[in-house]
Length: 66
Image (cartoon, rainbow, N blue to C red; front, top):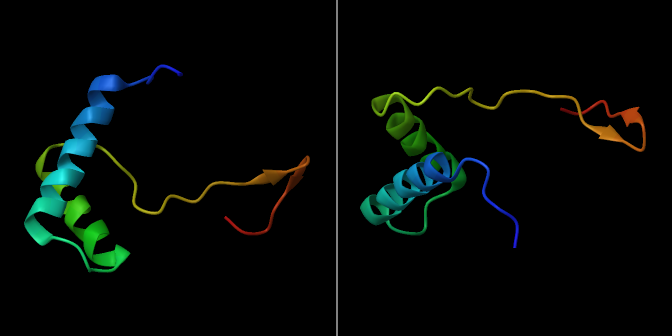
């Protein structure tokens, strides 16, 4: 099994996600959980970019979609 590169950071973010799930439960759409995660990241001082765009390369060609 491969090693987790940022183990502490990964566990911290997974913990935030679990907190959100424990608070909201199941059944909401992705946008609801995403907004809750944004609030958790902000309140915990975690730097992030919402829906950052990046180029995707397929067989040496940059696709028009981001």
